Length: 218
Length: 58
Length: 242
Image (cartoon, rainbow over all chains, first blue to last red; front, side, top):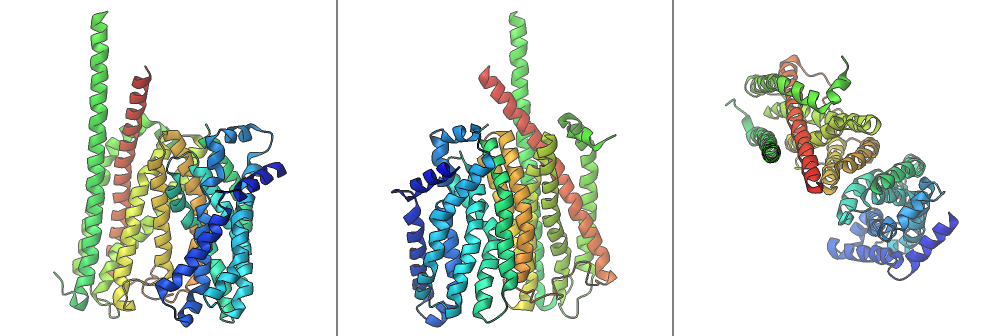
């Protein structure tokens, strides 16, 4: 399983692997927002949390269809399914690879981009915490969506339509965690909900995703 | 028409929207249903024809 | 006599064709009675004026929007466990009806709220949850349309429905948390909690019955169509291969 993980990571980091793409996309979105919303730093501070979260979410979405597509196309997915490795483990490894190459870099870069949006000082710590806790869920949910749509020719758009509503609870609780901290309020509830959702998806979605892959490979 | 007072537009548009949407749903369902029923019937008629002519040939 | 007899497509077609005229008749009767009663013969509310009449549209539509998804959840589960095609096709048939009900609930909810809120849209947790539910319906319908093989589509959409249901419930609580129900207990929260006076309650019951029966009628019609369509595709496939 570790070999698989390493292989996926290597693939992702290579040119065209999507590693830099997500970061670049994140940066572009953040840079575009002030152009759309106006340079008033007061307003930007208000929306900073939300923009950072939505930007990270959309950037995650970009590399999702790649998770199984290449393996499906060259037939290696069939091989992997018949290997002694449990399919659920394979799915989890893929989700982990996606997170390491997308979610984690986004989390680390977010504070820097927060500067561009005039994020409140308290927000910096919390944006990192909330993204660190939330992006694994985004990767896992995305992997599930990718498993559902693997093999569809124009699956990318359908994938987004399926996955974005599933992202809503994580987005709400993640952004609320930061917003409440910034407003000086108690933010334990959203923080716990966020963690709970992430843990739940990590525990349960691999099974749903594995089932979907088996169905798609019939 | 009862006196709807100052909210006449809101109430009427709510009813108009709902009844229109339900109407569209019903009509579309009936249309789709008729189309499929017809296609199936036509197909099964052709099959019956083909089977009969095959029998006649034997 | 077990309900599983109707899982047999032939039995389903026979029974549904016998039952359908009655359901349609009853649906029409309840709807006309309920809506006419509510529209023409109820007084205005002292707070909401004549907009209270929207209750006869909004509440039944909202209830159906949610209950139809619950029905899809149940039939998806039945498909995955017992592999009854009628069950899978019933879920497929129900989705557009549910989506329409959701849109009606959203629209009437927004219109109803407008005089109270002063804006055409408010991120009220209730309405927000319905917006999210609409997206789930869209995704489900899109998925059925995207997959060619009927059984594969049934399997994948069932998984989507099951997983989606969990997230739909989560989203409900998240939306409530996110916008702490600024209108809690106020105009739109009129389920069993708030006491509706009988003068509205009675026509509302007829409207509820009417919507439910309308759903059943449309469901039967659409499921019959899906069964026929599936049979047609199977026959065409067999012909092509022979």
